[in-house]
Length: 492
Image 1 (tube, rainbow, N blue to C red):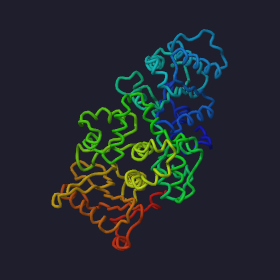
Image 2 (image 1 turned 30 degrees about the horizontal axis):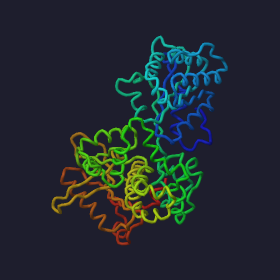
Image 3 (image 1 turned 60 degrees about the vertical axis):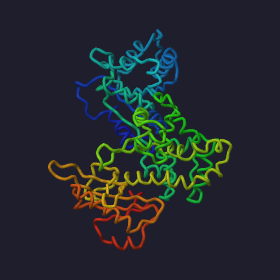
Image 4 (image 1 turned 135 degrees about the vertical axis):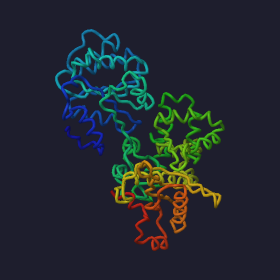
């Protein structure tokens, strides 16, 4: 196993995957030759940092492509090969048909990573490049005599997603498919050095778990405590002089498949405002439902939006913005952009702070509670849930619907009703009382009538402020009720 450098925070499993790809413990002789790995993930997640550390730790080669013509990219690639091999390329490469075979022939001695970062920049001007790599990895190709561990990396999610899908040339060729995600909420708090759970959630609701925002985009500025949070927002996210100020705009502009930014910003604004269904988004944008299907699909392909099915209503789903900073921009910054650009952040923040708590932090807290269930040990609900999400339970007698924020389902067993492990409600800004628990109990009873197995269902209240004394007294010792506060949410 290749030792992970101390400067690489967390990323243990990712490093294990990369190490196993570069230097596998067991590799049949029949699989000798070059191998292909693909690393993807949204920008600012530390892909380049991680891969550069891998190249240094193993003596591999790291090449970062730039936006350039094919001819210039070939010159840059030739120069990188020359620096690494210390052998001059006597005849300039005419195209990638010359460069790729030469590249593989340079790596015959031992298995080391050969990393090509920002690969989409190359394919944009050289669409045949994936096919050329496929050919050289195939029977009779130069890769059969090579020990290279070729790693292609990129941040354009739609491009990287298509690299190994469908009828793509490289489909079935990759021995590693690694997607680098943002840090999970507990890891993000540790990375930022924040020990107060409430402050950690407030910060996470803006910057999420993106590593680059900790140092590169805020220059290491971390709120000292809860009292410093408002000032921190003003001097970082709402400050036109920091990179964080325009980052949400750039995240959208960097995706090549997004050709009508105004429409996509409106779709994102709809979701950030709480219009999370297809119909609600269409109504907000002023389009028909079928006219926003394509934008939503593109945003999903770019990993900016995710579609979360209603676990109790087949065919129904809600959309959620994946990147917290985009939610913050669409719900808070975009509406007051002219004022923010002329340094009126303090005034704007005073006016929108309650909107931030209600429209940004509230829904974000619900998603963190679902992440908590995903990470929780099996002792909480008796076993690990196989499906976690939210759902709506119709209540015909009261002519209303009960929205359940956190749903945990057991595996479907043939011939048996679907077991519900837990139903939960999350409240960020109010003390939870008995009426919240009674609402969950009503949802449980309605689901029982619909044929679900609710005999062992745990009712869970997730409180951002806390729980009333009446609620705590009424559930004391009840194994079928859980009260989860902020401290428990961050307890590993």
